Length: 309
Image 1 (cartoon, helix red, strand yellow):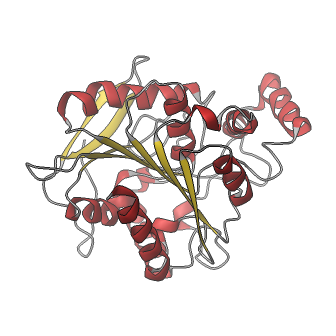
Image 2 (cartoon, helix red, strand yellow; image 1 turned 90 degrees about the vertical axis):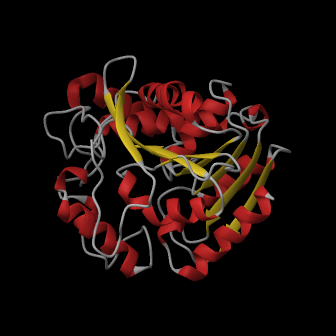
């Protein structure tokens, strides 16, 4: 296993990169930065759909500069972890329980044996949904949570019983491995900057594209019907009024004001149902807050530093 870098975007110093196998045999690529000898703890960084370790080098460097160790990994079906279909550009999962297994396996085989506690979960979008599931079920000993653009609600899907039924029927009929209507195999990170819903920072957007151009195996196309059905079912769980009350760890939700991929309103409503969750809105930022302009990222880091101190 290796990491991909660019001349102007190097790998942060001190990395250990390798792979493990989850309990079902799927190989997962991970990277670990132990941080300083007297590290303040370890940040477990959970990526969103179609993301990969290299995309977060800048963020990892910023965490190390704050005195933390860092662990991150590629979810199954993306990055350089095992893909689940012969067509490797299809974003596919059968059930989010498979992602649960990935997270538990990384925690059991990488984090607990070799990483300094306390453990802080920093998670984006799909990764944030997985972190919430794990903490609610007490399956990993995470001490604090910071969630950016959490996939708590998906517009037109999470709260629509009809949409979820239709997706389940399509999966049952054997269409789960097909792209969602309108989806295609064009690598998401190589699509034009203009009109994207992810970030308004063209430099960071194009940096990610250059990483994928350097190693096309990092890239992923549109989600499949199966992935979308699994996501709709997983996020529907968050509508249960009791779910937020099971999040006992101190938590911070940071939602971009211009998010068109997940629902900021759902994140706010979820946060307001728990005394342990603080909610912050970053106005005018798009979905990928950590890949946004510095004016938005600085608001994230101010909230992060205030939360952790």
